Image 1 (cartoon, one colour):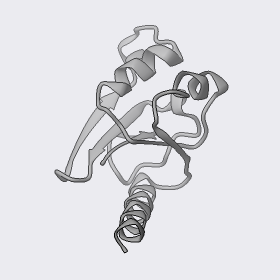
Image 2 (image 1 turned 90 degrees about the vertical axis):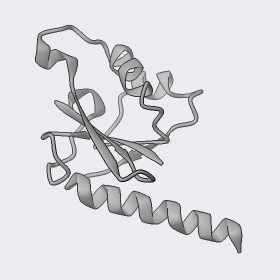
Image 3 (image 1 turned 45 degrees about the vertical axis):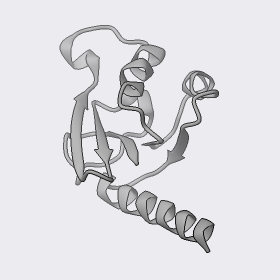
Length: 113
């Protein structure tokens, strides 16, 4: 499962950003391969980036879930047809990731029973 987490720092112990577009970093976690990539927000390179432009960058990683403190109406509308689960989360990225993976495992177990 590919999960994108909007964070305030480039590591799993950092706090989740209060809104998707406001995160200075995006952690892209592949839970099956056990790998993580860090994607800095384009504005850190002094490049303008609209919310939809940011989403285009993030969608290259084919996320199934996106975690952030909140999502603007523009982001929700842009992702309406993408079949990506948007989850609001607070606290540390590692805790939200653990919860998300645990919930996915429970759903898979329920489907196989």
